[in-house]
Image 1: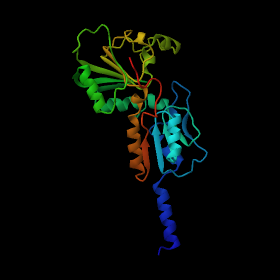
Image 2: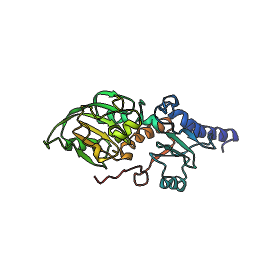
Image 3: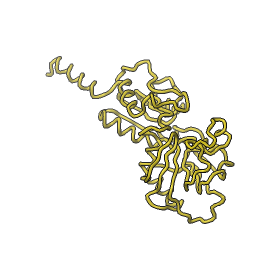
Image 4: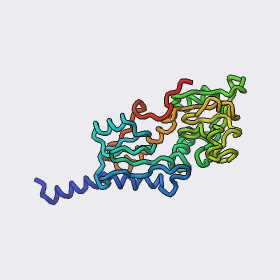
Length: 274
């Protein structure tokens, strides 16, 4: 029979094997530091909880804290929600929004570039660019994207100036989420980004622009890209959460970590019909 001291030590060891909500935030904020947040938008950041010292056993990861995500969280008795978009819901929640979209070392854009194997990678504020591992047709590129976790749930737009169906593509620009801002004249003007090399992509000489969501069809030919691929807003941002899940489990192997299904985790025009 175990002594009270042995039981106490077992309980203590168990607690040390699992983090508190605050410890999870502190760990992830090393990858998404506050000082690099909010370059463009003044959005919510970090842990929102009345019980930051509460132990965490089950974590749910999502892009957007929709009503359905919150319902699942409560039904399955998760302890902590980690989300990308910065809407605060009334459950313990960690938010990393614009830092994931911007020039983070472990953000959406650089994850995409590394995941699909881009060469000669260049990263700016909200985009990443590079060369494909070899020239591909649009069909081959779509297969390559799907193979590496970027499922195309949106639309593929061919520039009307392109006549050759079998044109090969060598270079890519990627912007997670609402990348249509960077080719939309009205947005570029309202944000003061006109002719800004960091944001205005209309005159960029790259073959393909891949993003989550455009704004208007009229933007499609107002640029030099041969193709624009809309992945769907969430589909452009969700893959990174596999990396976050792995980091959490490497740090705390006894954690239970799930990623929400896109059926309940959605944002903007995720399923596009052309």
